[in-house]
Amino acid sequence: MIQYEKATGDFDLTGKVAVVVGGAGGIGEATARMYAKKGAKVAIVDCKDNCQEVADAIKADFGVETVGVKCDVTSQASVDAMVDKVIEALKEVNILAAMPGFVDLYRATDIEIETIEKHLAINTVGVFRVCQAVANLMIEQGKGGKIVCITSQADFIAINKHVGYTMSKAAVVGMIKVCALEWAEYGINVNGVAPTVVNTYMGEKAWQGKVKTDMIEKIPAHRFAETDEIAAAVLFLSCNESNMITGEDLVVDGGFTIY
Image 1 (cartoon, rainbow, N blue to C red):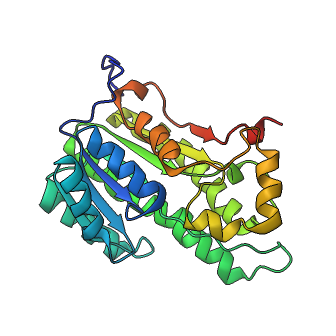
Image 2: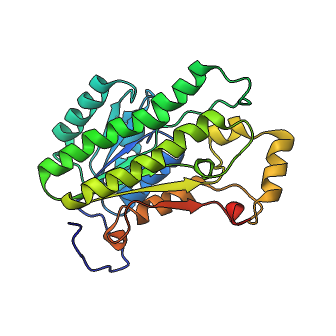
């Protein structure tokens, strides 16, 4: 059962431990910083080598306990080792922000099956792997928890050359719904945040030149999102204020999908 806890509007995470997978840059780092600002201890998990460096910077800026752990979400052994290291350093896990990501854009007639499989391995199976590992830990702890996955507006609309990415993100939405249903009895909320294009490395990789200007023209807000705007949505779904929300995919797209 997901317990009622009074919504104060403070979005306070004092005493919570948050794991941010994909936390060494972009939306992940912005999310980790918001968590820390609200009092959470933070584990920075990423495939990059700068996890501890980012963790140290957040500790210096906000005065919370942090740890950096390098992890390959396509490896079960790596994910299991990551969870063990987080527990060793921070003792428990109350929040998971699962946002590892890969994108490589081709038309559906041209994309190699290996590229499709890489999208699925990282964006779908990799996300589920960390969700499953952390959910099992949360169930063992008996305190409930919050799991938030980064999905995409591409999980429910068609975007040119996004077939691999769309397949991987649409599958995550299905995963969120099933996990939310099954894990509610343990007090675990599972939700997604579906951004429009975000000004990150991945966003720049996918949207350049005329396709970028054309896309911005179609967005009623007439711009791409910034990382802190997506992090704010993740923060909301990680706090008591969102206890009655589970199994949802919160769209943050500047109005792009209202057409």
